[in-house]
Image (tube, rainbow, N blue to C red):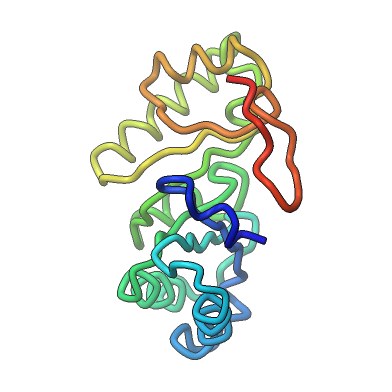
Length: 173
């Protein structure tokens, strides 16, 4: 289904993976690359995301996975950042291309000083490390405005469109 969406510039297909289930990254990625070739989906448009919600028992292993995925030319991401086990410790070990801020950090950020302070710190850290930020779970114009004022450029959430299968939903903004 994603093959029909490749005409959209810089559109990525996000694939979540569980690092504890990946034994050898170069081997585990083989099926994905075969499917990419078979359906003529550009492998450069793949983004592999590890969710911060899974406790990583071997951070060196995760670092090796991300190094292999970078070597292959894939975009790497930490999904649900701020919701899980490692937080900033994960960033000290490796730096992905993208951090997706968990919706619990972005929800009602316009009226929550503590969330504003935390997100400002994460943004400063990400900027210094050359990491792009995607704010997840944006539902109100006030959340969007606050995050834009903080310098966030990329967003996802119901404010823009509901999830859809088989096509990209029309964005409201």
